[in-house]
Image: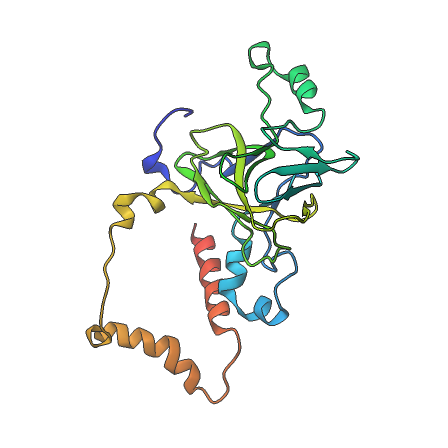
Length: 266
């Protein structure tokens, strides 16, 4: 299956095949973990209980963490960096290795792959942009890719913004690298290994192909609503608000019931 084109198999993976497989390459890096409906405990209680849209988005995918604690600082032109135990700051003029990793990689890699350990951190030629390796490679089931993005509904301290990307990890097996834009100057920007840096979400490749995304239409005027549209609007908006006693979380309950029935059928 390794180099086949799985465009027509983007449903459920085969029974013995995992949808996503994370390969940890830096042995001290924190393991990925399933994202949770509370956005790592940061969602307000009312949102967690009743907002199915927010909790479903928060739980969709997996959290990835920096492989160690480190900091960067940008003065608008040059970037310096340091890490826990380093004792000093160092210029980030080009890519640098994870501390001590090159020797470890060469000790376990086949002879023809030695000296090809992935860089850990690097400054790009554009001002204020850095590239970070998460210490992982990832493989997905045929027909599935990974959307790499900031964690959904999870606040962060600021100082950086991730670029989102879609990686076809069913075909490409290499270091999972992300690009970050630094947004503060002349202050240390800290990255902590116990707080999610990224959220990766498996998506079927057909979901973002042009042939599917071009299949859409726009209804420009409310006067063009069909009777079916008005019926659905009534059921969604009017009927719940017409109830004398309106239970909270009706959408959440209906969505969960639908998922349960679909899981049972599948």
